[in-house]
Length: 140
Length: 444
Image 1 (cartoon, each protein chain N blue to C red):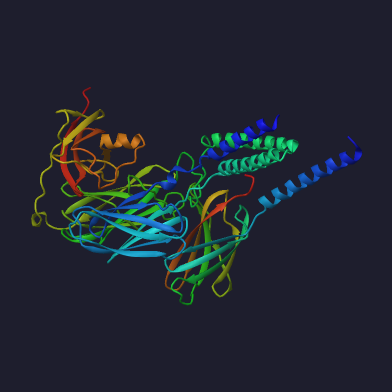
Image 2 (cartoon, chains in turn yellow, brown; image 1 turned 90 degrees about the horizontal axis):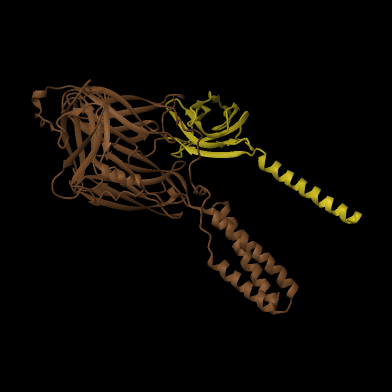
């Protein structure tokens, strides 16, 4: 094999390997997740920075389903894994704007099918909005 | 290879590639109907949801009213679990008229939905999933390989006709390779697990042990109903591991929950199907027929789990002398004179003239309770159970496909007196016949 051909072959192989590595990195990189659900009186939209084990950042927006001005006093988020009987403690939502809250902490103990319970408390009612979330650490 | 033979081979492969259509990998449950019984507004309803084949698309729902039926207007709506209703209609159920009320709604997307029934003072939420079949990776691969085969062979054919033998040979070889890949994948597709349909649930990881057990708090509203009055029986189900409401019930013998409510003396009997009204909360309205203590047993099944029983008791106040005496239970027919505990016994009952319609997927139900109210058993009619086990879809509730003789097999677990209720449906009328049987101990 001529040196030029050998160099070209090695270059193609290296580029291919780099491309595959980049694809794998992109595939396994945690991506933000947007979830939406409704309860009896409220609707909630949750943005998770990632659906993985470990510390998670959750941005929660709530609104009244009847269109009236929202009057949420506190918002918390907790997670449960019905298949395994796991539940995590509530994370309090810190109010960061009108009807917008931010929570940070560990929600998911293991990969699998989980549910988030967003609990909206007002002076009069407690509404629980449950949404499904798939927790996947990538590659296992 | 001559141009003639190359052309013939290319044509043969081209025809084969067009004729061979890969089998799409469909999950078997994507096309299955969801059939759920509900005790709603004083009527025993069977709600059959005929799954849509596409979205957006029509969702056909049959409401089958059994006798006795109350006159009621029912608002039927459908909504995804994450949003408000997307379509609604109303149905007027006629008093004591056994018939099917078909309605058509529109669904806009796949995934988890609620079918909601509303009547004055009552609501029922029936969970179902809109599933649309989709081909798996193997299906797409086979389709792509067949398409590549066709394209390559067409080009090879063109090359052969125009005298470019080398190019035609190259394209023909590539086409043949693509065909082999396509045919192999298409053949293997049948043996691969089907792709999950669009809208399928997130698969859990419960494993063979199933989900945690459910615990129940069973109450009545009012707390102590009076004989002759209507009351609400409320069942609150809680997950034994997390304490959260249990909101993952799946159809179990064609209902989300079966509640058997009997007076302790066995003179009052209800087999009803409570409505899901909120996460973990089931309700059913009943009329207290007899005073005294009552026993409640509720059979449910959680997703990825087996069936389980929860039970409770309540008291009905009143004077037994003010209500009509119930008919005395007859001896259980079609069984040996001596029924022995621990040994299976065959029960054969002639229901009289006329064929029988299935109810809850079976031709007949034999519900067995011991005298103390501590044991509750439930046997299904053998012929319909055999058909179910063989994989035959049960006929619709309106099809008189069974009987008139019903056969059961049951093992009474311990000596004593048992109360037995036979239930079947004829002409869409629910028939309940009480029996009693004394079971003796196995001789030492």
